[in-house]
Image (cartoon, rainbow, N blue to C red; front, side):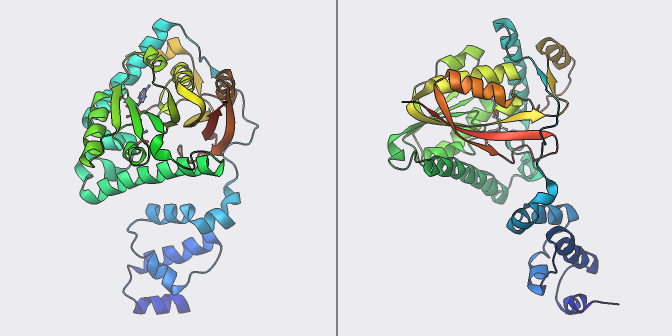
Length: 338
Ligand SMILES: C[S@@+](CC[C@H](N)C(=O)[O-])C[C@H]1O[C@@H](n2cnc3c(N)ncnc32)[C@H](O)[C@@H]1O
């Protein structure tokens, strides 16, 4: 027998009964309440259950009222990780070469998808609508950085007199948003094709305040210009821990006194371990490039931050690795002491 809501729905021009039911049950199971007709209609555009499910779990209502049912992604009862994060210069060079080979290949084949791995950002699907969405997401990410800064009382005014360094700029997704706000942007990346794509996009907007530089050697990170702000998102996590350590040190070295750094990385992943020699052997056996996920624990991050005379202002539990159980990604906001 049809419920009153389903009866009313049958009079509306909506998709199949199954998907109407799916929407009704999404409200019941995920949000814990009945849907109104208007809400069912508003969700009727989804063509598959995965999109419907994601929309509900990402909704403000779920995060506000029901997020606790997911619990934290790590509990604190997980074991220590075995991570070698200090290696000699030769090993460091070999590690960085492996990173570069992988990203240059992605840069040639799937530059946008390698930045945000969703089907709509594959070259074959990259129409104007998808490209706009891609670059708009960079505006939001830049705003998040500035909001964190502002709520801590920094970068509140005269942004157009400040310099910012973006590490791992990719195809300019966030770079253009930084260039629209700051006086000068220094954009670094290890992959020449990504950098070229970023340069083309940023200059196509008429922005002339960005310098694009390729990283070719681990020690390049010791020669950054001094800057007021640092930004690196979804980059460090793709590098072996010894490389993350060196990059983070180089970046924090580049901050002027009073300068602000925003950086994100994965700080825990259950089952993860890193031994440089074993890792390099496994990389040699690979046929295809892989988007790798690495970890530098919070304790190491705090050690590096304090060794560079910086103070942690905020640590966010962020969504960049998907809140998967057993993994933790953090966004750090750090300030160099004056
Ligand atoms: C997932 S993409 C993110 C791009 C950009 N941060 C964004 O959020 O749109 C990672 C980028 O970091 C670059 N990258 C990875 N490891 C790097 C390293 N060690 N040094 C410089 N760039 C690196 C890659 O070439 C790629 O362009």
